[in-house]
Image (cartoon, rainbow, N blue to C red):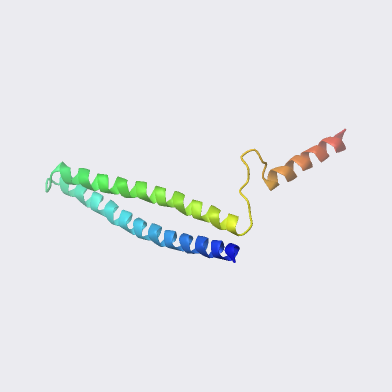
Length: 113
């Protein structure tokens, strides 16, 4: 039951995180539009540069938030994998494909000799 609860929690966390990311990306798109508009108004002499700076700061803050929340989504995915009985690969542990390639190369060396 504990394992089932861990999987449910991880799935729920991931789902909520994806919804948050979708919302942040919509906000970012709106902020980028506002930045473009404020630059255009500044170039045409309709507003001062302070509005451009505020729009730029807002856009950059949202970009940082998106990056941070994407990292959090990856952490939730790792929790899900662990809850499903997997394990995270060690930094020093070769991936399965690397093991197969190294075995193929060693077989080829033996065949040529």
